[in-house]
Each structure stands twice: as C-alpha cells, then as structure tokens.
Image (cartoon, rainbow, N blue to C red; front, side):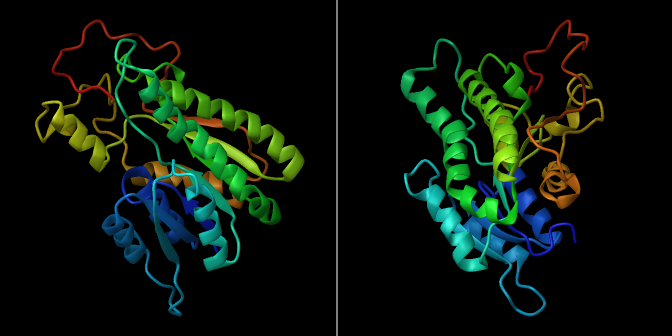
Length: 271
C-alpha cells in the first residue's frame, strides 16, 4: 500500500481525472476527502471508496464552489477534523472554458484565473501547517496547454501556465524551508465524461474517440483517468522521495521538434 494511512484531499474528484485519482489513492490505502459541485456525484465516489474492513470511513465528501471564500479552509479543516491529519493535497479542479483574443473579456479571464491559479495557492496556504507536520506534498494537475494552448483556449492556457510557475516556485521554496514537496503533472488529451460531452456538443458523433487520427493519438486511443491517476500516485507516494518543483508532461508525442501537421480536417476532433 503506497499511500497507507495517508490523508489526501482531491479537488474536483466527483468526475474525470480527479475521480480517478481519488479512487486510485484509496486503493493504495489512503483516506480521501472527495470534493465536487454535484452532491450526488460526490456521494457516489465516497460510496465507491467505502469503509475499511473494520467499518471505519475511508472517505468523506465536501460539496462547494472552490472560488467561494471559505471553501479552501473548509476542505482542509474537514480533512483534519475527520482523519486527524493531512498528508497530500491534489489541486485538480479547474474551469475549462473556451475563449480567444476576441472573446476573452476581463470577467472571463478573472474567473478562469481565480479557479485555476489563485484557488490552488489559497489551498496550499490553508494546508501548509498540516503538510509541514507530516512532511507531506502537493500535486497540481495542469495541462499540456500550459506550454501554448489552442487559439480558443487562451484564458485556460494562461491559467495553466501560471499554475506551472506556482509549482516550480513553491516546489523549490517549500521543500527547502518546510520539507513540503510540490509537483505537477500536465495531462494531454484524456477521455473523461466531460470531454466526451464537450465534443458531442461540438457536433461530433458519439463514437468519435474510435476515429481519432494517429497524429493526435499514436496509440489509437486517448488516455484514461486511471492512467493519469497512476502517475499521480507515484508523485504522492514516499517513493518519490526528494522529487520537488517538477512538471511532468503526460502525452503521446513530443512537443518540441515534432513534425507539424500539414492539414487538419475541420471535422477532425482536436484536444
């Protein structure tokens, strides 16, 4: 059990990658604070984790908007009150919205930056006293869009770039001064429930994941949340030892030096 008895907060863990990380952490022995916006989905994940063999709860749920002023502290307080400690914080929740140079106004930009960059900082601040006590760690879930991003993901890409800088800065400072590691993984294209709905809303057929061009998915398929979770658990576990301030890209092809596509059909799904 790589996370035996550790207490882990995973934001945005009612669906998608966050759900995969919450379930994966529990399978490795962790006790998990599940967070989301939908009470029924949060309850489903808590129920799926279930109690220990002795009947002790291994998960607790919290429903709330992270951008609300008291939510970061409420999550940390819940973890400590219910499980007595905090070892790991996974900043996974994010606002994934479209916007380009023409459509991104101040209100949209500020909303995305608050959820995707400021809230992780506030959560780390709230968690730090407890992570210091356990020599715990933080894992931020970014995106390969942090390196540039598509034209219609401008505010999202900018927010993930800011998160990457936060990771490298605090991963250096907090590890040296507090013994708290901070790392980040940047997933590429992952087939989550929300991504499937998003592509269908853009006019793609229900079987679009099976018809992806190899330029976008050399393996013939997209990543699953469980595959992202497997890497996340490695970073959260003690086996990562002194690894801090690192950003790991999880994609099927390189970003630097890759031959660009000569043409893309307007009907081709893109990340």
